[in-house]
Length: 126
Image 1 (cartoon, rainbow, N blue to C red):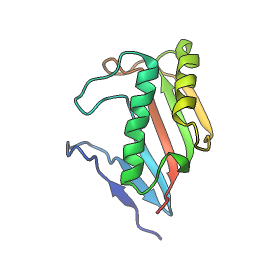
Image 2 (spheres, rainbow, N blue to C red):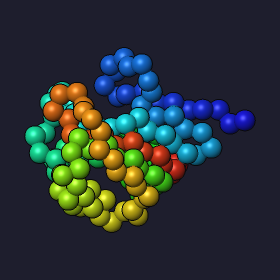
Image 3 (cartoon, helix red, strand yellow):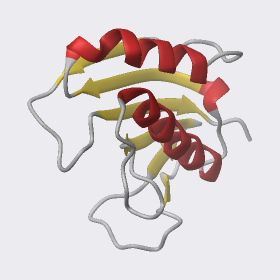
Image 4 (cartoon, rainbow, N blue to C red):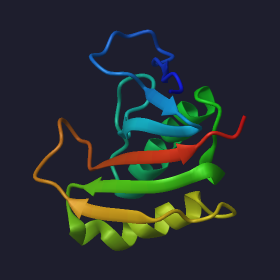
């Protein structure tokens, strides 16, 4: 059996979960929310999509992967009425990358001003 490789968050803050876990070159990424390094959250959904992808990309790079290696995304939205704006920002951010299979669902609520969370599975590139 191959060992499981886990990465922790680069900010050093303790959390009750890992940033990523990888086995057999498959990486499972902790759900990524649109929180900036300073703890703030962008106001509009397009900016939140972009920030969540910034955070996802950072987690993937730390786990020897990147956005081109995404295998599956599950996206949680606070309001499906924002789907068109979210989808436009999503497509812009993934422009030039293969589009992974995706599931998008509405959830009851998030903490604070967050309106999106992205859950990802990717292949290792290293």
